[in-house]
Length: 333
Image 1: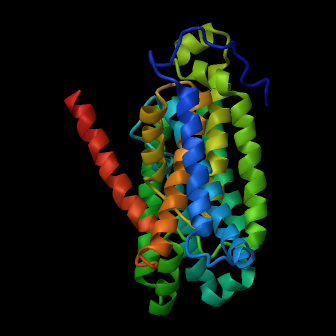
Image 2: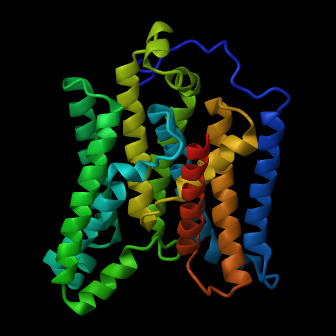
């Protein structure tokens, strides 16, 4: 894997003058620790043993999903050189919706539940990752197409999958449709401990592999011509990064459900807050901001608003506003 992305450290500085990314990352890390402590301690009543046993599983899901979505979005911005796109535009969310809909439509609620959470997680992860990797490999290596055509195909495929899912939902039994609706919203409260272990292994292994190639990612962000001139195999690097994005998005989506705009929100916040464009800074900054947002938001919803709403709904609302702001800001420039 390390042979795929081998490139010298770029000599051109990508850090804004006067900024201190290390200090800012340290402050973000302290804020993330504070959010985790607040989630554990608020309304604990001094019974830490019960709190640790009850809240640790949910906290692990929040941290894993937040970090995976943040890293995958930064990587996707690197290869597309466009900060208003997210991996969901490739059709991952639509494929998840189609898989859930087809499962309940053909197997029924009883049949899907009989599979068990581990089997469902495995099927969703393998199908989403396998199809995306096959598409990336065929288009970028065998056919020699560009990443922009790949994004366009992803948009078309996502639209087709959502249309097929909508067709099945219209002729589905009402009770089955209600069960399906609950599955289509991201939920951090019903994650099985066995799934967390598998998801943690996949996400941590992928993030470690990405971190080892952080300098090559800086070169990849310079564009195909410059990256090739600096000794990077651009096409193979592109495929490798897309595979990493596929694994992170597929695992996080299969674990809790789709979160369309969350990665867009934390990635663009990381670019502004960290003050650097180096991946050694932006990857960590986006991950820490994701932890702060998810854990802090869940703590506020549980202990201040008494679970008056779902965290994913608020994230999608704020992320949608951020997406519109980025579009309008790009037009003004």
